[in-house]
Length: 311
Image 1: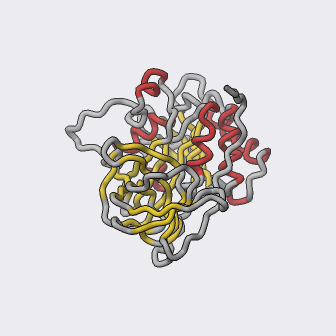
Image 2: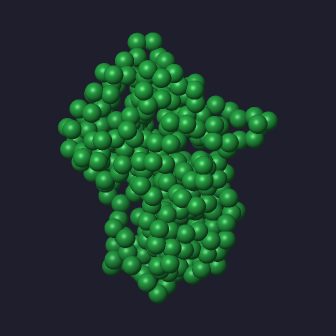
């Protein structure tokens, strides 16, 4: 199966979480009779209270034989570290920009990170149905921002999709009345490159995020960079600091992402985003490898905080 891994990045309140909701619905992630709340990706109580995304979420959709792993990331500068870690898991980004507001400060911050990592952007000018929206002006502002941030030629040629996340429609041409999100799905499959797919090499994965289950304990989430992992495999946990001692562990459970659910699987190949259980001492930035090839991946660099407090 073909895989595409993408992150959705935007300034707070530019509509990316609502857009993901509609993408899930149109891709058939929910049953027809299933009652689903709005902003399904904001599952954390604080997120629902504030109406913003704080923690990165993983989900997936299937589109004409291609699995698209989608990570909805925070759009507020206070949670920028979460964004930087997520960008290491993906090959492309959907840059969601409000058709009235245009690029905002957090748009600049996250886009700079994505472009520097060589990620392939798709520009989504959202809320085209908003009163006062000016998609043409915003498109030009985004292009100016790309140039200012020294995007390469491929990134400068990013496709532009005009959308209304609230209505669940998109178009590549404002002269064409949009009917659904098909143009957006097709742009992802066509323009975002597939992830590394050396499924035969020795297993290697960088832990980008951590989750916790009361039944399974700490779980490391990341993209498999090389090889295939199986339930029951013994693995090595390599810390960021090569002078620190490496740990051994055993993969007791393995999960891929299907819709909003974790799907338990027996194995997963390179390119897939998975959650590994059984890694008691797992931390963000660790490299998980097979025992015979303990090769460390480059760590995750996170910018210094705006404010730090010593106690």
